[in-house]
Each structure stands twice: as C-alpha cells, then as structure tokens.
Image (cartoon, rainbow, N blue to C red; front, side):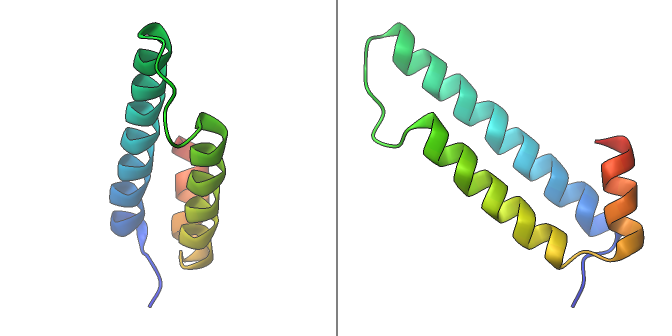
Length: 70
C-alpha cells in the first residue's frame, strides 16, 4: 500500500505538529533548567527516520505534491 495525496497531507500535518510540540517542550524544559530525558537531537533524528519511511511508502505524485507545498 502506498500513501496517496490525501494520506500524505494528514501525515505531513502530523509530523509537523509533533515537531513543533517537541521544540516547544524542549524550549520549556530549557527555560525551567530541566534536562529532558530525550534530547532534541535524538528527536530530530527519529523524526527524520519516520519521514524517510513515510517517503518510501508514498506515491511519486503525492511525494512531489508534498515537497512542493511543504
């Protein structure tokens, strides 16, 4: 099964929302002088890995559309 354009729109939104929340949580932790259990760098590496997996299972048309509007 490959992700189509509709699937990809939802997945892109989910990844973008998760990434924004992760940055917010990491920034809040820094402001409160707390050290998060999972570092920002690790989160970013895992997000990129998930993004690569999503890309692998996306139709060419949907992938081109995603890259065009993201």
